[in-house]
Length: 262
Image 1 (cartoon, one colour):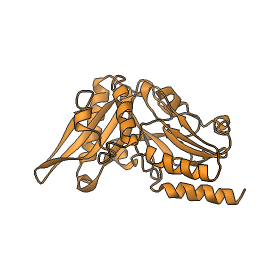
Image 2 (tube, one colour):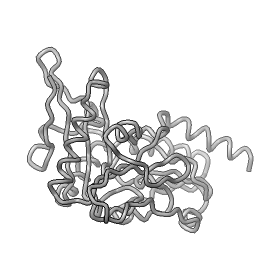
Image 3 (tube, one colour):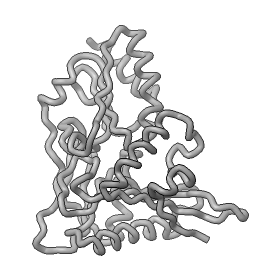
Image 4 (cartoon, helix red, strand yellow):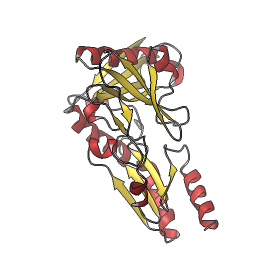
């Protein structure tokens, strides 16, 4: 049997978060916890799906959403609710649990008088939900951006301005300079796991390396480099990774190949 629990300031340290839950002592998880504690004050909601398995309650998914003014994607969505993440794993998939979590966010947005609810989607980005679940709930595509990002929205008002993906600014990419730059907003705990090996690789290759930390939501929305908002890898003034890779070595291999062609 499934139930949904609210994670908030009172229970986040006790009940924890979904992502990286087996590695709570690692920096990525701790960064996320510290990040989310600040976001609760901005209206962020984090709801976790709990499934009873052999008499034990285990987390098998979650949804994270926030008022548009405070969202951490590269979008403009004032007056709307923005879904950051929607994730279901294991046997909890294809059981209607994703819809249950989505309905929590939709109902919350309506109760708060929002113009609608919006989510960035991608069929190639592991950190973003596929558009399929949103289309099923009546969401429509309202914007898109290279290389594989889409914006889907469910509007509650015919008069409200629609959210949009903020433009990429070539000058912002060039400003990263030579070498490797990693964007990190701490919204995703997985990003930290790839920073150390890439920095180690950069040092061995005598490549300049820097982390572009995003300190607030406006920096994420207006990052000018990647619609995803909270992540990106730039090498020699070129964005080479728009979404967290399944293997960090793939990024290292890509940079090595580019070095061979220099």
